[in-house]
Amino acid sequence: MKTFLNDYAAKHNVMMHNLVDRESELRFLEETFSEGKAQLVVFYGRRRVGKSFLTAQFIKEKKGIYCL
Image (cartoon, rainbow, N blue to C red; front, side):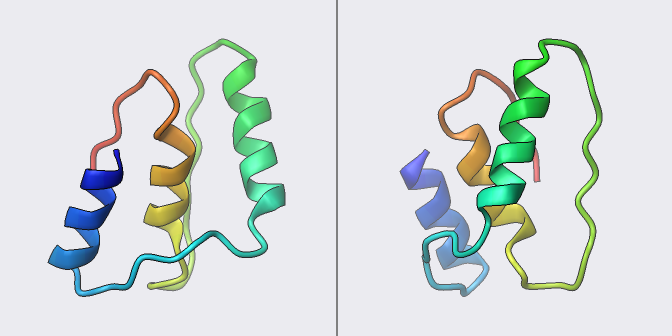
């Protein structure tokens, strides 16, 4: 997954960074994921605030599919 993130960063001309102040969002995603049923979570917001990066960080340790 790290290779994917590095490739994504290079392709989109962004720097790799750590998640900052995203604990509540990650906690929500973990709680939702742990319910074990199909659900849809929608991310919306201004561009370049880390929506895709947050999603990639969340899914990297999970069995699942992430399409961008």
